Amino acid sequence: GLELVAQIIHDAPDYLMPNGELWIEHDPEQEEPIKQLADSRFTVTTQQDQYQIARYSVLKLINA
Image (tube, rainbow, N blue to C red; front, top):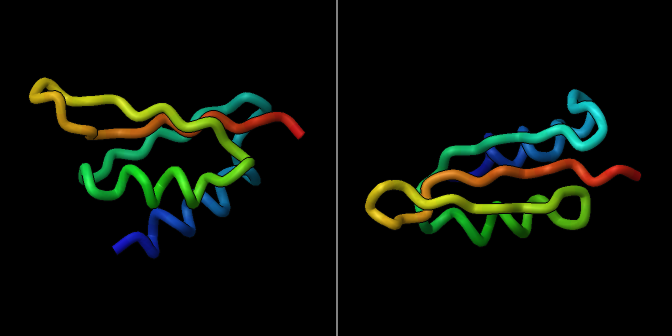
C-alpha cells in the first residue's frame, strides 16, 4: 500500500530545507499515485532502472 509513503510525503515539508529533495524508491505501478500525493508542494521526476522500469521518484520541494 501507499499509506506509509503518503505519510512521508505529507510530513516531508516539515523536515526539508527550501528546494530540498525527497527520494522514494517504489514499484512501477506506484508512479502516478506518488505524483498525485505530491500535489502542488513538489515537482516530481521519476527515474528508470537499468531495465527501463520506473523505479524511484525525486520529489523536490517547491518554495512557498
